[in-house]
Length: 323
Image (tube, rainbow, N blue to C red; front, side):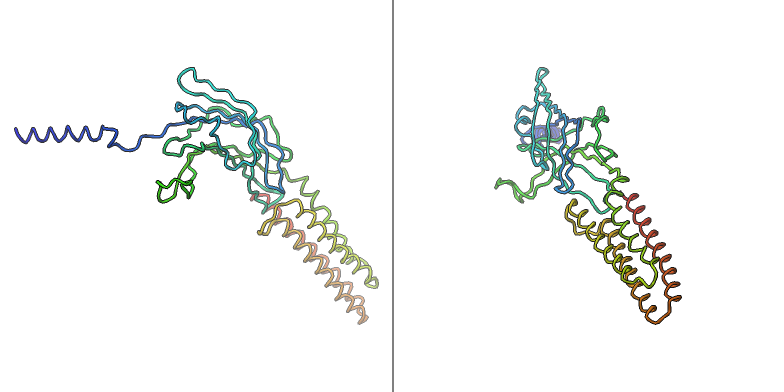
């Protein structure tokens, strides 16, 4: 009987211990159901790596302290403009809707430019409540963007919304947190856009290809006209260099070797080969080996054209498939 009484008393105190809020684990964070509808993406500035996005955002939550009207943060935004805001709390839950326009900063991937596939990213957080108090839940009902809006020169490949946590290796001055590490729940949007590069490619590289063809034509100038041969080749060389500087001026700086660099690089190399071939032909002419010089020119012309076209086609196909 005594053992039974002790066992019952122990079970009773254990139940009280785990039920008592003071001894239980931290309470679960409140949820914020969040959705977005993108109405426009425009002003894509490739040089400054930024774009403008306009969207409707809605949030549903119970905790009034969250106050998204004042605490909403868009971490990657350069500027944030809110043009419309409504709040409905008639059913005991806050339903907030706002229309916003943000100028976003992002990093462009230009390795395969102009056949590039860009990732546009945007996220929102609550600046006052971390992930222990607040977590976002994505509202996935319906579309996330207006399929009727178009991006000049771009095609929308996909649009994905998700939620997660953003870690900050700081306590933002709170000395009670050690080590200094905080996490904030966020709501993220990732849109993939692919450039329609056909027209843009020829607009950028037509001058380079014409310059190469001008240098290539020198093979068909009679071997007596060496001055004309060298004049065309050297002129083409500077034309390609000028074309590259013009294209580079419209691109963000990068340390990687891009398709633009590769195409201009091989063009400069093949023009150098043409100049070297003309030099050798001139040597044969001075030795009165006119026929040998002509045969050398014709054979090398075919080899250079075949190699140049093959390399260009391979690089372009590889870049367009990689995106």
